[in-house]
Image (cartoon, rainbow, N blue to C red):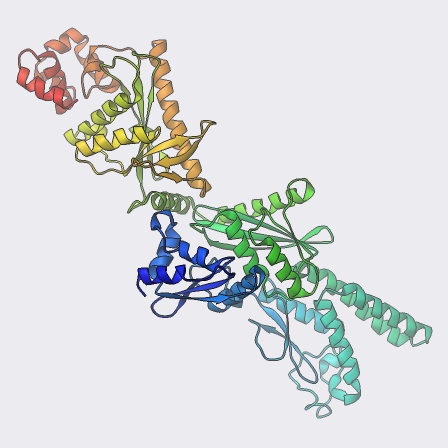
Amino acid sequence: MTFDELKEKAHSLPLKPGVYIMQDAKNTVIYVGKAKALKNRVSQYFQDSASHTEKTRAMVSQIDHFDVIIADSEFEALVLECSLIKRHQPRYNILLKDGKGYPYIRLSNEAYPRFSLAGKVAEDGARYFGPYASRHNTQAIIDALRGALRLPSCNKKFPRDIGKERPCLNYHMGKCDGYCRGDELKEQHDQAIAQAVSLLEGRFKEVQADLTAEMEQAAEELRFERAAEVRDRLRAIELLGKRQKVIAGSLADTDVTGFFRGTAKSCFVVLHYVEGELAAKEFDLLETPVEEDEEGVLSSLVREYYVGRTRLPKQILLPCELPDQVPLTRMLSEQVGYRVELVTPQRGAKMDLIRLAVQNAQEEVARATTREERQSKLLEALGRMLGLEEPPRRMESYDISNTGASDIVASMVVYVDGKPLKRDYRRFKLKDMTGPDDYASMEQVLTRRFRRYLDGDEKFDQCPDLLLIDGGQEHVKVASRVLEKLGLNIPAFGMVKDDRHRTRALVHPDGREIGIQAIPAVFALIGQIQEETHRFAIEYHRQLQAGHVKTSVLDQIPGVGEKRRQQLLKHFKSVKVVKGASLEELRTVVPQNTALSVYLYFHKEENPETRKEENGCE
């Protein structure tokens, strides 16, 4: 389908809840989403792409056709969406590990059921418990169940192999009740399996009570050997219960979730608390989502993690409210048959647990991400936000500082690969200004800077990938005008501040504002650059006002900064001698282009045409 056909189909959808399924030309499902009103939600994908995030634009460019399934309610749409995401694993949905990464305990459907480890749930009539955190821990639970309840671990199949051979060594060692001895033990086997199921479902106290009652009854009947057997089983089960509470997070009383969005990687953490104590921690690292806000990301992660589990905690603490929290609560509760609460604490002890979970997520990201990866992803994210073809490795930022017509200065701060490069910092003293005028000042500074770049001045021989101007739309329009006049194609953006003097957005010369708060690392970097640029300008301005920076006629010469001025004065001893020096003498002290600027400045009357040309370069 063409884009117009997709758009027309989207507008023809009903204003009803449902699920939409985006597919590419190969009929591969690339995205599944839910909507309260299908027409409104799906139509947004085929509007002006300027308002779309990079991920949405990439996804829309791959859509060949889409299908929708109408639901009776938002709740049904949510359930259906979760099912379809699990089935298709669409590339543009936020996904945790593949389901194969979470093992299950399988209880076979046969006369003498057996426990085994399974990689995924299958529709084979068997019962599945989990998923659990790892294959090692899951196998440990199975082994502990067999040992505590004395269930067989051999390869014999019952009732086929009953009575064919003598009981194996496990029976003689007291590790198995020897069900291979005869059919009369079937009831005992069923009872042990039922107790194992109760343990896997978290009903430890129920099993404990049953065994305690059986032990006491055997003792009353003077069957002390049986009472001792039950006592040993009871102790083994108590140990198993403590162990499983630690390694089987799905049986926790409370889960605390945390999410940290890093520059390169992000992390979703779940802390499992049992009877008020931290029992286990699970986390998943994923590529940082490039579009959704925290609420949307967390909603997807919570659904990915909890949907399909046979046991859930009674309370799940969340760091923020989810947009679909009500239907999600209902879905999880119906999934396990009891009330599961999703709670977003605002203060107190529960909020402290949320902070701990987020801190754990942050630390996992820090361990998994190198500084180079963080910086690379940070610049890639900034480049995507601004629509640049390549990440901006070298960024230059400019600010003006003044207190009147005199002592108007400007600063140029340089960041390379996200870090300040102080040796390339430059400062300017504005010339021929009749009063404070930020726009005229910015025009003069940028013209001087890029004229020197075009003239090959070694102090300005690097061309930036991005210009950041302290100010709003008018300031950056001045920058664009200067660059266009000089024939330079360098993207420029203004740094807009909020009422508290903090950077809140970047503004394009055409007035479009680009929010930077969605990615905290980008927000922090731009804020740091703006503060550093402002600090450098203010510092120079204060030095001038305090007389710490001595000025002379040499400061009025294009291409002569503090370093060149000091070189000239050190060699020639005075401005008068510099004025009388020949061009060849000047070249022995400073670079050729600087020597020419100095010579022409003091000999303008001798060569008016040349000086006129030089004035045109300033």
